[in-house]
Length: 137
Image (cartoon, rainbow, N blue to C red; front, side, top):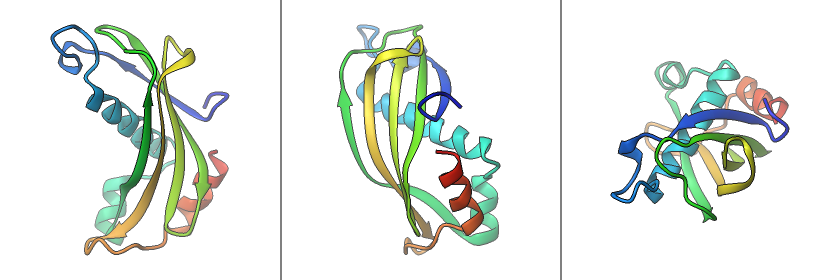
């Protein structure tokens, strides 16, 4: 955990960049996803087991992204993940991508993740997971 919640390191590989060596915009979303997955893992939540045993998955419901400065090939980034809200069937996150772990951020996102079943219907987040989300803020 960091001052702003969970932080996960990501190295920018050539495959993450465009011809100019700048990270392609959609890859920032992948970096955010990796950090949320690792954050859940650090809380002890196995997403595959959640799907197999409870028929539940987390999906991004909405997202607002702001790009400030580009990341480039071989940069070492820190991707933060902070829970803002933990509701019955959704959680709100604030995420940032920092170069060398320092502000100002290269990219920021505010997003809501929903808990759904295999029919894509909203379902309550299991109480033990929601409690961890609230505690892991």
